[in-house]
Image (tube, rainbow, N blue to C red; front, side, top):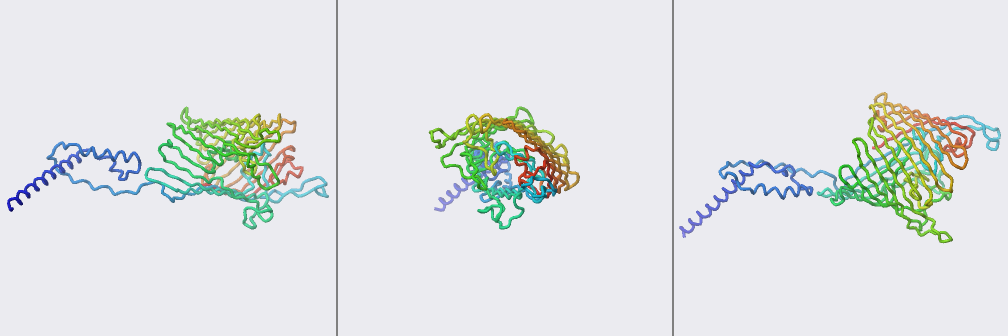
Length: 526
């Protein structure tokens, strides 16, 4: 028995010795080999990291070059670091705000006897804003010292899902507040709507233009982001005139920015579209008819770069009419349509120049420009024969830190509504910003609008000029926040006056062909 125990002891010692020698040889071979890349990434957070980790042991299993190599103690493993990236519950906030108040310069003017027994009256009081009644009710005016509202957009982005593979889902929610200071200068009750607008309330509104969900990071989406809900979608605008010439926003769903290689990005979305609301004397547009419904298919290709610093962007929209709306003769009341946008963006002088060409027919004549109390101009009520041609050029430059500007030119030809009635709209303007001192700027803006109809009426003309010293946190044209003291002078012709030249109708009801306003305004975005 004692001899047997001794034999078992020798056998165990021999096995332990051989095993130890083999392990030491492996350690020595591993110390001679280059360090695996995955040692810098302790967690396999992505598909690529997982693939690298499965290949690493093969390097360590290679036969040792020299079994007698000295044993080198292994370096301590780096401490694990928490994975970076968004986490469920993360919230970020961005937004925009402008607001202030102003007044009309007082003066005494002559008026018809039916307005005043003395034949004169005073002009003055609350601020009014100047704009031509543009074709189809388009909202466009040169903004500096010419905005009679408080406007606020606060965009909340909430991460609702995130995993180690980089897939992230985000909820977007943006309450928007509009308070028209043309009609009332304060908020007496704090409510946003009332059966008696402009009396017990300001006539303000609260809307939710962004309320949607998206998912990004799914490998088979090609780098694109899937989304559904209501949202501002790939908008292009002229900032100084607040003119959104390419704005396919709405209620819909799609996949945006699919990577096709290099900088090419493809986006497709389907939006609901319905009939055009008709005025019924209410403060806002009524709901469209239930039987009116269509689908607006929006396809965009961006990132076409023929040379450095230049890019082409192409968009095509097709409106499919799926309504059940017919007249008494059984003829369809609604129609589809199509439209195309081609835009070239050129980088220059610290900014860029955007040159856009747009053409549409039928329902495709609407390119998303907001009108009728910020209701989109997409509609199934346009006839197939109606058309719109538009050319827009927006030049934004910042050649030196203290001097910047933006210039805008618009030409639009409409063949809409009554057969044979054509309308031309020309708009041109510019704003310059001179940061003459730290936290101080001088702003100047001039804008000109011309509307001519083919019915033989006189053309409508409006010119607006504004000067505004400002306190600002930066010297650039687009640096914000900004607090301004402004003075605006505008002049127009008789055709423009009778067509309603100002929002408060202060000058529309007089024989004046010019007007002046002054006030304070703040603007910021973050």
